[in-house]
Image (cartoon, rainbow, N blue to C red; front, side, top):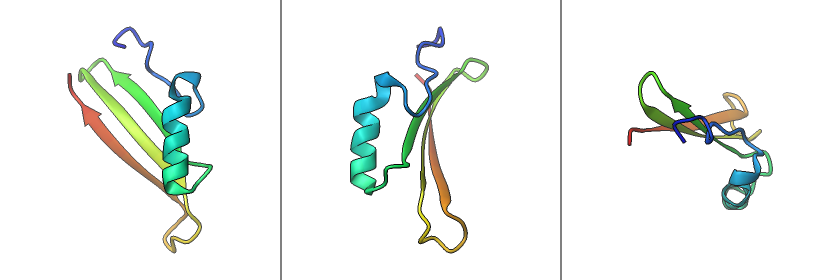
Length: 69
């Protein structure tokens, strides 16, 4: 992963099952899971993003989690 093999975007085949489970749980086909390795801080950043037009402040939301191995 530290070689960049897991710097993956939303619709990457490696995340297909996880993304599918997130989309089902949120009942939202636009939900997206991304993983990014940040070598300078030696952390992984996992980001979940989704759209929901019911939110009055704006439809785009995201949640990020930083993980240091």
